[in-house]
Length: 447
Image (cartoon, rainbow, N blue to C red):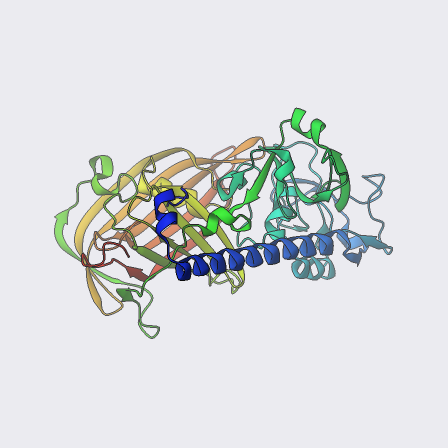
């Protein structure tokens, strides 16, 4: 994907109708951006002004059953915190939190803990609390489909060249520390900003001095769909060349041909596919017992022949994440996949401890794919606050050279979060299935 400006010569020879179309597209993009900015501020204000009432059940000070120390931001722990049986304003801060307003209200009614203030950043997040942390709050304002961190937000954004460019809905981010949502300028000189942010004890609106923020290491960021540059190279997807019929089985049937695949260095699986024609795309669906996650999928494709980046869109209902990644991505395909689907987008120290590949074919959606069955055991680390989560991942996938970009027809992951003693403290299963793909025929080089 390229965001370079159209050549001056091309602009000179454009006919008036094309110019009119270009102006119309620019105006449409501006209207879309304005609507997204207004929506972000509306959501932010809803979190800051949300009125709720806690009971004693929503207060907790101790260690949860997972061994995570938890302190809710009530008046007994924070001077400005909430009091049980009194109206509170603002969704409370929860370390690692990503609650929607509906989930927060429901959780309070169910007696879940209202927020979680960690004593130190190395503490884990508690699954028994509700609320939002700073990056979870910004992700909600941008209606992102997945929780982000102050480390992963950068890959979703353009970094602004100057503080004066800040516009409503932009982020002011300090890597691995804190992020806030820009609302407006306080003064004409643009030296003070009014923001929304999730802090102790809750989401609120307040002002900051820009010079101080800059000294502290903050940077102005803009979520790509909030910027006109994102619309300069429209990403259009042609009709699929394969689509799984809705009434066909979701699990492929694989048959081995009795031969082993090359597993040393993982051969073709070593890195993201580079031989993909422009206009190619692939869509997966994440199967889940949780209805709100069942519709999650990634749609990836190349916009132009000289594209150096891949666009990824992850959707869940009306929430989505738009991001880009280098076409020449380093690392194994496993690492690329895990980096993409991981909530924080960070994968470190990945090691394949066991692996095998067997050749064969799979029947899926009425089509026969030549496919290698890939089974592997991985260990890796994923940053969380100032500590690293140690993970063990079991992989069972069917990989085909006829599937562009990622190559998988199906991919099943069993992910275990390991405690200090190496024993799993939390486990989750993820099953991805190919929904559709497109590989343009050679006669469509400009697709």
